[in-house]
Amino acid sequence: MAKFKKATKKTTASGTRGRAKAKDDAQQQAEQLSSKLSESAQQIWLAGVGAFSRAQAEGTKLFDALIKEGMSLEQTARRFAGGQADAVRDVVGSRVGQARERASDTWDRLEKVFEDRVQRALVKLGVPGRDDLNDLSRRVDALTAELRRQGGAAPRKSPARKSASKQATQSPAARKSPRKATKAKPAS
Image (cartoon, rainbow, N blue to C red):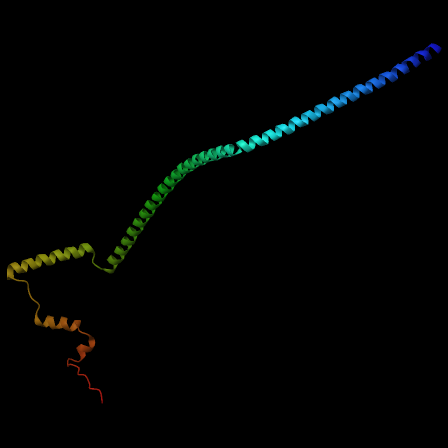
């Protein structure tokens, strides 16, 4: 056991020196790491400042380029929307035309039904129709022509007929008193 104690003493002395050396190595590594981190932080800071400077210098150019691109996209969208609006306008126009035609047809049919019903009612009442009146007018014209050929002239109204027709056109008050009405003078 004595041998073992000697060996342990030797290891302890060399272990203290090893620990000190390891401590120095760790401190150096920490300093190196700290300086590397500091350098990296400095580089990041400089990159940020450079980016800010470039953004200031090229920012207006980039902004103008973005405006031009936006205007181009807007014009494209307007052209597309305009084309779609024209298509919709055409479809609506054709549908409105169809609706007008249907309404016109409906009104025509309704008018025809109304005319037919009125005509039937007039026939039931015994009122002569257009064809009857045209036929009657032709017959009167033929008789008038025949009378002119035979008698030389169309018959004239007799005086009795004239006075009867004149009385029919007069007002009822004028028919009752054939005398002229005289104005009464106002009392002064």
